[in-house]
Image (tube, rainbow, N blue to C red; front, side, top):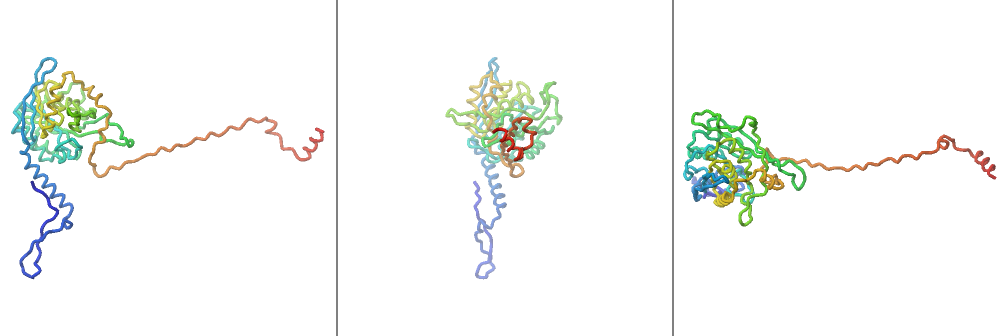
Length: 373
């Protein structure tokens, strides 16, 4: 594995006046910071590519039966999605959903510290194309806002029937404990279409006549995460089955094969099985695949998407760490000022004669006292 050291070498003339150059170490303070970042990123990319084949590959073929007795095949694969053609069995895949690494993570997630680049995306989609026997397919990428350009360019290079972009909106995001503010209540997704003829077919969409083809999918975030037998969170970024079901039901048909790439907790695979499709899950993390195995084994065919939203609890996913967009985002705090309203006391009604009578003079007062005597 390559490592970047905080010094380099430079040549200088020796102190004896000879013409021979002498190499000496260059202090780290003389290296521009931007050059250090550039070199470190290049080294990280090199090490990542060299270690692709180091992930132990495991493949299992299983069956899941619903309450009606219908059997659906699925496979669980440990390996890198950029090499999936080497270990994933060819099937009639008409849809792939990939929740790619964004480049930021919370404790409990794996392999997410380095975001997928355009090169990574092209390799993944190309290897998926080599793994399907279908003449038409769709590829969905769930990604961050910062990856939008790379995702759209990668899909445009590999999908010959056009690219569309959409948003996943999380309506159950609640305010932060430290006060109301705008929360990161959405994620981006993009879809590319491919056909052997280079023409987008009508059957690539499964929208009903009365259904709007809107590109904003509303699905509550999962805040009650999938737990391991020891009670640990399997993946802090668990996607809802309802989101996977929207992609599965609109961009594939029954008995098709659906690939859940970078599967995490396998929500798209669950959605595929529940909706009468066969499935395939791929992830580099063996622990994730083991959790998906347990999840499918205990999956009930009466799984309710409505119950998933209710059981997800109070939405706090807006607290997840998100990178700044276009620089630091400022916040505006408002303070409520209480204004005490003072009511004016109403003047008591006085007799009209007192209000209109003039003040008595001193002579008038003396005459009044004389009358009283």
